[in-house]
Length: 189
Length: 88
Image (cartoon, rainbow over all chains, first blue to last red; front, side, top):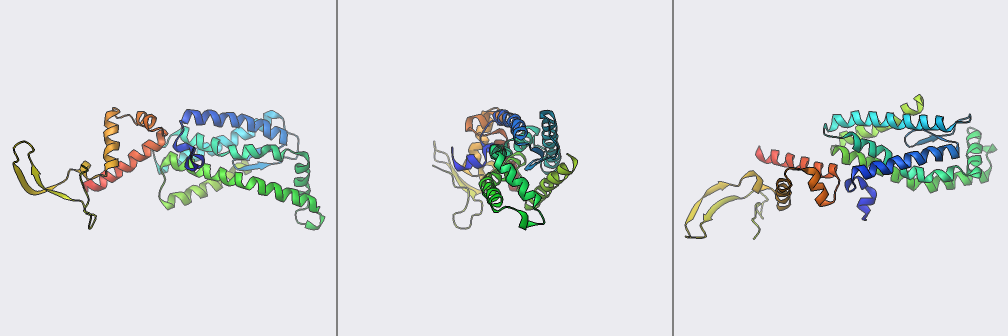
């Protein structure tokens, strides 16, 4: 396996294998979110709801946010290239989230969750935040950053392979659409 | 031997000026433009030949090249664009 394949597996691997992998990780993600007390209210975003969520609540929100992203991206991809297929867009969304799902167990650690809550409570009043909590959150952030970057790389390369996008105007429109997907999804779900 | 299609000096597409019968050595001279497909690079010509030999199945070509279907379709789309430009 070359670096090129690692950063763009969509170029090489069969779509059915990618879809299977994506669905397996989607299911793992539901349990991961439930364990960590988080929800995927949009792609690339996890939020910590105040009230206790059942596994069905987590499944519903995760499912809807993924479906929302897939539908919007599919419509957008058809504007760029009418030959773009739904399975390639589904794979783009599902596979690009895998690195973040891998980072999930760390977010479920009790001391990390406590540190995160402490930092969130201290928003606007940093003097009240414990230094140790700040260090834990900073270290956690640094540890997940490469996975987040890898996730974005997979997301862009998946879309690029699905649509054969080349023009910079389309790439900018893709970035704006992706941003709108995450903002809208978080507002809805 | 590889047929050169591009001028090594200015990169312009070359024309055919002479053809020779290998059997009787008859020579034909003139200024003939290369057919569109011959103006393509060797790799592109091989791609089209493979496409033909795979009965026009991009899926089959992708399988043979160990690449995904969209990657192979994108290569085909790029090639179509290239041929369209050459036809103008």
